[in-house]
Image (cartoon, rainbow, N blue to C red; front, side):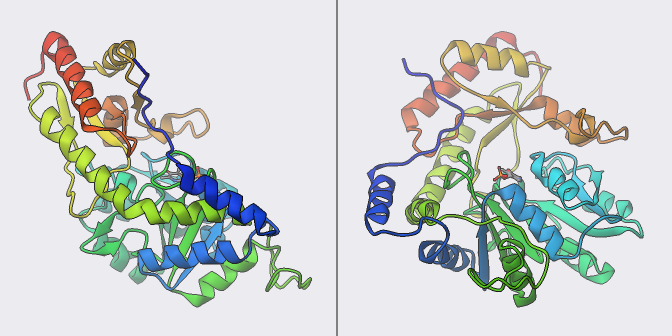
Length: 369
Ligand SMILES: *Cc1c(COP(=O)(O)O)cnc(C)c1O
């Protein structure tokens, strides 16, 4: 039986043909018309005025911070539970990371703790809409940041295709950021995007990604900038992936619903509240009780089923090595497990995975919910 990976990118002949046709058409390969078209498509899909694509999601967060004026001496609030790039982008921009704990209900920043963490040096907040979920008090974040003159940057790298009441995640802050690395909802191998409705910000972003020039080939350097450019080769793949996105969003929801229906009743497994009208879960996430996560992973691996543990609480990692109390991030990072989540998983495979989980839990779990 074939091994079922936790996640797998998915291409077919449409991407292959698009790349072939592009190469035959004699383009320059670097960013040009196809890149602009990809940006336009993302802006349309997310309902924003402007989109700028760059070479990855770490860079998109970093230039979002720089475009917002964040730099040395400033502090930026980041959730303790997130992919490490959310924090490292702050370091790359030259600022300091201040970790704040998350809420158990949605794994996003805790609003009250965020408020308490603000100091006179705080310049921005990075709100991570993790796995397509958003904080209960999303509007509170917007109002608070506006009142305090803080920039709100939304790291929506895991939220392509996720909305709040019809409004795409990533559009609530001053700038939203996406990633198209090979594991994300749609992929161009590597890639990132920034979305905003503020012309001033997009103008800064465009210069930051292109050596500070107003446009390609015009060698006047109006501001500091580097080379964070995309390529048309990636854009033609991205355009095909965007066409597949609505189907993929729908399928991700069906997959989550199928897992949930099966797993909800199993002793020792908990799920995170998920509104499927809004959220298109990027990864299928569960919490494994009784300290049994590693055992379950081993068991599933033996059955040819790939899983991946949640990210660690970042403050505990050697690179940050901070002390402090982040009970929710610590607890979920020890219990959290991602199950196979590729959008081309079929129902039969999902049922087999769930049956294996049930077999394990019936045998080893003692928890009463
Ligand atoms: C993937 C991811 C990033 C980083 O994106 P890359 O394109 O891999 O650099 C940042 N934040 C979050 C939440 C992510 O999931």
